[in-house]
Amino acid sequence: MLRFRNLLGALVLGAGALLSAAPARAAGEAVAIPDTRFSFDGIFGTFDRASLQRGFQVYKEVCSACHSMHLLSYRNLLEIGFTGDQARALAAQFQVMDGPNDQGEMFERPARLSDRFRRPFPNDQAARAANNGALPPDLSVIVKARPGGADYIHALLTGYSDPPEGFQLGQGMNYNKYFPGHQIAMPNVLNPGQVQFADGTEGSVENMAHDVSSFLAWAAEPELEQRRRMGVRIILFLVVIGGLTYAVKRKVWADVH
Ligand code: HEC
Image (cartoon, rainbow, N blue to C red; front, side, top):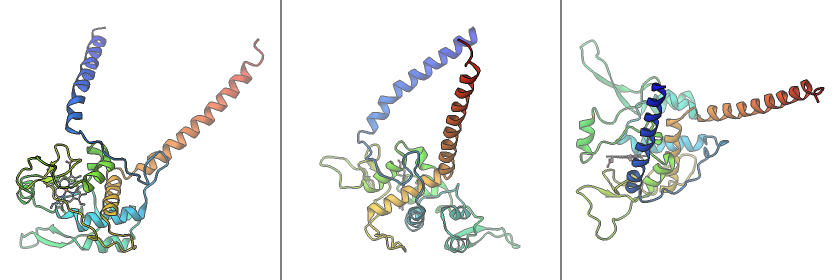
């Protein structure tokens, strides 16, 4: 009984903490995040491989200058439809640190499929020093780490503008409508035509933001499609078992009046 009371107490406290935290969070996020249509929305949604590949290109050419994605290896690129040769060639465009060699020195070499995505800075202090004191977060699971997920990333990347009249912008900071507090150390990094997509997709800010948000959603949850397929199978299984059980029940009780 005592244990039960403790549990009940903990539950009440937990609920109280959640309720009191909610208004604080709401105050920081006055602007609603617009809903973007992604191919992976809804229960039957799947990733669009071409979009993921373009998204990786945006990450490679723009975001990887500041952001690491240390949970990914170059071999993971095979999962978004790149062939082995393509993935090897993409990896080789990055230089990673290896060693020590026979002289005891570290050396740089082109990345291989087995390497993790290259980190742009040797450590967090160097990253802060290069970014006005702010740390560019690792993007491996950023879609799971922010309310709004891929919609938020898309909104953030397209949400830069001049600050409204009277807004005090800190030194080296940028105004962004969707960033909590509206001041972000990350500059507006996407400009029209910045990335030239091989498949002829226009390199508009909207397309780049959309594709890189999709890529980051995939990176954060590569097993999304399997999870949904399994869910659908389980529902089908339950429907069949439910039907059978009902039929058996009817049969067993048929003679009881
Ligand atoms: C010039 C360096 C630089 C580049 C290039 C860059 N970022 Fe950033 N990014 C930053 C910094 C610095 C921060 C931390 C901002 C802060 O805390 O004020 C940041 C923060 C973020 C955040 C977290 C925002 C939050 O809610 O905390 C996301 C998401 C993000 N960047 C995505 C991207 C994407 C996607 C790209 C490529 C299209 C990109 N960044 C390119 C420097 C960069």
